[in-house]
Every structure is written in structure tokens, then in C-alpha cells.
Length: 294
Ligand SMILES: *Cc1c(COP(=O)(O)O)cnc(C)c1O
Image (tube, rainbow, N blue to C red; front, side, top):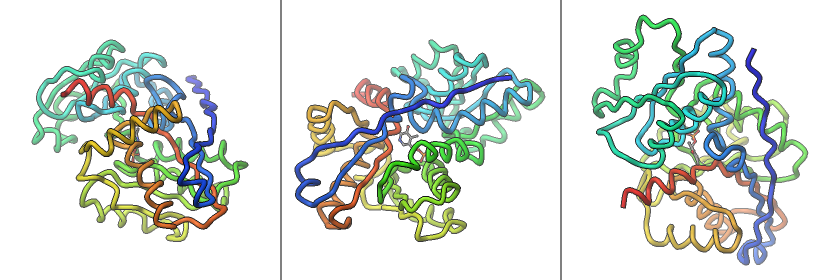
């Protein structure tokens, strides 16, 4: 039977003049260093999918993602590490970038599909793998119940860490949901916050109605123009953060999350004396991917 050990990732304090001025402390949980390529929430979300695939006796993982998807790379690397063949449906025309090259190095077979076909994942799967009994399908981004379960487990590591607010960036939102589940499971008095990196995504709030609304807060005004949209202020912030802390942030998710946290501090959203813990979910390989594109 497959065994997957949880990574133990450190929590580091970030010194930043604004935070000191506001009487706040900010910590980062370095999930980004859990594994160089299966990093952050992707590791957490894959864990129970892999265990399930193993339990069902499947030897091939099939999943979906965009050309810069951290989930695609994580699945390729995890598949190689834990003995699965991997197959990725990639949205759009064939492109070359670090994320895809590394995924192929890890043995993933890539299949590029048009944006229209990509929307019909059920049909794609049926057409290519409908009769194949060896295949385990992982949803895009690694979410779903099993993905959230893996993220919820991270709260076990955090339960003795005293903080008032816990932040994550939000793409599909399965990480945030897992975090809220973890807070519920451990009965922690921490508020979960999601910095949403997609534009016009306010409707996603409907997916959270099963949770007690006091447990979490979604922030919709830090997307900076939308998913993967970058600007010179964001790039300058990432540079400044890296040079002052030694921590790299990607442009798609974690750079926007940190700017969001600092903006909220600036607006006196937090009370003096409070502590904030931000989860760094990796994605730095995607950053080099974005640089390749230019
Ligand atoms: C995938 C990813 C996210 C978003 O996670 P969701 O569960 O889709 O909300 C955030 N940060 C990084 C670095 C990621 O790779």
C-alpha cells in the first residue's frame, strides 16, 4: 500500500515596517518548500487522490490544466515519485515553457486540446480513456472532497500556532475550503481569508454557504485586473519582497495575496496586536514560466 508522509514546513516571521507601525505580526508558512515541484497546496490536494488511486489499483493518473499550471507539474512529479503513469490534458495550442518541459521530463504525456474541447472534460475523458480500467481521474487543480481533505490536514500542523487570521490565495477555492474544514475539525478560533485572484468571481461566494460565515472572509478586490494579469507595481513588490525576506512570490497568486494582506493592514482592517499567518503555496516555477513567455 502506498504511503505518503506529510511535509513539515517551517513558519517564518516577516518583518515589514508597515506591520510594525500597525502593531501587527505576519508569519508565512513555507508550504512552498515542501517539495521543489509538488509544492504547496498542490502537494496537500494530491495526497488523498494518490492514496485513492492506489487503493483502487489504478496505475495511471489523468488530469487537466492550463499551460502554466502548477497542478500539472505537481501531478507529473508526484506520479513519477509514487509510481504512476501520468497524462495531462492541456488547454490551448502547444506551447513550450518550463512547467510543461519539466512535466514531460517527469514522464507526463501531454495532450493539447482546444479551449472548446477543454470545457467538455467528461467527453474528453470518455473519448481517450472511456474503456481504460487503469485510469484514475483527478479534477483540474486537484480539488474535490479528497483534495480539500488533504488541505484540512495542514491545520493539524498549525493548531498550536497562535494567530488570529489565516490567509490563502484563491483560484478554484479548494484550498480555502480545505482550510475552513480544517479550522472546523480542530475547533480553532482562527478566521480564514481568501484573496481571490480572478476577476468578477463574486459568485463563487455561493459555494461557501455550507460554512459558518464567521469562519471565513473572501476578498475580491486584489485581483489586479484578473487571473495571471500582472503590472509593474506587482513586479516591483515581488522584487522588493524577495530582496528583503529571501522569499520568492509568484505573480499569479502569492504576490497578490501579500499585497492584499499589506493593503488590509494599511486600511486598519486588523486590530493592533493581532497575528496573521499566510500560507505560501509555491508556484515559483510558474513564475519562471511567465518570464519565459515574454
Ligand atoms: C493552485 C494555486 C493556488 C490556488 O489554489 P486553489 O485551491 O485553486 O484556490 C494558489 N497558489 C498557488 C501557488 C497555486 O499553485
